Amino acid sequence: MKNKEKVKEQLKQAQTKERKKGTGTRETVKRNISRNKKTGKYIVTLYLGAELGKPKRSFQTCDTLKEAEALLKKHEYERANLGKRSTNTQITIEECAKAYIANKPLAPTTKEDYANILRRIVSRGLGRKKIIRTKKIDIQEYIDGLLREGELKAKTINSDRTFLCSVFNYAKDCEYISDNVVERVKRLPVDEFEGTAYTEGQIKELLTEIENSGDLRLKAFVYLGMCEGMRRGEISGLKWENIDFENRRIHIIEVRTPIKGQVITKEPKTKKSRRTIAMTDIVRTCLIEYRQQQEESGLLGEYVIIGEKGLPLRPNQMNNKLTRFLEKHDLKHIRIHDLRHTFCTLGIDSGLDFAHMAKFLGHSNSRITEQIYTHLKDDSIDRVGAVMQNALSEIMNVRAEN
Image (cartoon, rainbow, N blue to C red; front, top):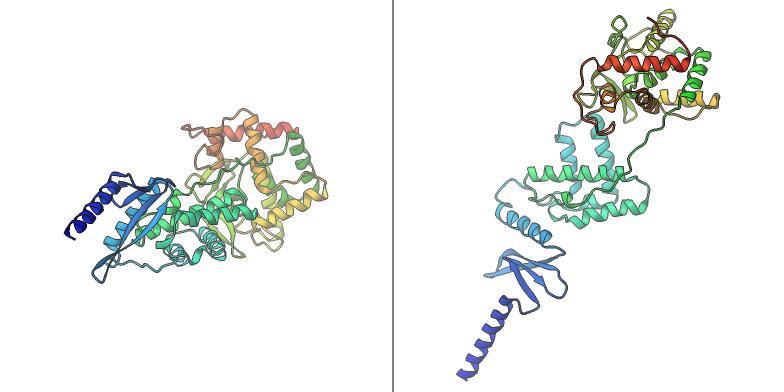
């Protein structure tokens, strides 16, 4: 009887030894991580405490060793910290995202954008998932679902991913989690944007029709877009006090942008967007005429581009007014922002490099204008203004003022 028990014990020890050597189905890779030889997947052993004096374990399977190591690291952090610090193991993605939007110093427009993204996340069920239980596959399935629906562009879907990544980083700061699983989800490839731009012939046709119409307001914001490269919000937010007629300078320090059905005034989103640009003679003459018209009609006020009652024109109202004018005169459709693209195209065609255009346009870096990095001299704004003046004067077949 004793011999049988001895043989049984020796067999058990041999089996244990074989497993440790990796001769069984699993092989030990490192502490608490093993690999299934048949499937090639990695098994992580997670310790959940003790029950009735015995250790309680669970096992999770990962496709790669990197994922297994990340899971084990997250688990060990949670075992060491949860319950000992001010954490919230029950918080959902939706709740954490709302806290992030409320507590971070975000611009009103950014908060509105994030709120729209969060509504999309919640509507597809991801918002109900607890932060601490969210895996990479959950985020990937959300993105794949948006792709299958086919309603959003890759750039927009990447914005969702960026927002989720920020929310999970916020959760790490709050010590709700130890690992940001969103960082391991790849961004979608995005096609480079190509703006619509008018040809020289189309520019001449548009400016001629505007001149014949006698509409100085339309002429003013079209000239500011196409001859100065200003953004729609910058044109809408331009005030008379920020125009230096004597020194031929336009100071861009405010923008007007729509949010929740209203238009708010704010600073440009980057330091380089807050800039000073040269004012061409063509634009200067146009603005002087438009200002005089406002004075004569008793509507002269704070803002340059105004409506019939003297109130500043909304950005979308400018687009609508331009669209109606183009349709009426059977001209190619173009947005206010496309006037800016036209400005850039004309400047490059006239011999300006991308770095000069980047400074004049207020881009945060010159990659936006062809990935050129150059330190520019302060006289670059005059150079851009001079080139645009000569180019537009030639198109319009007029001579620039001395």
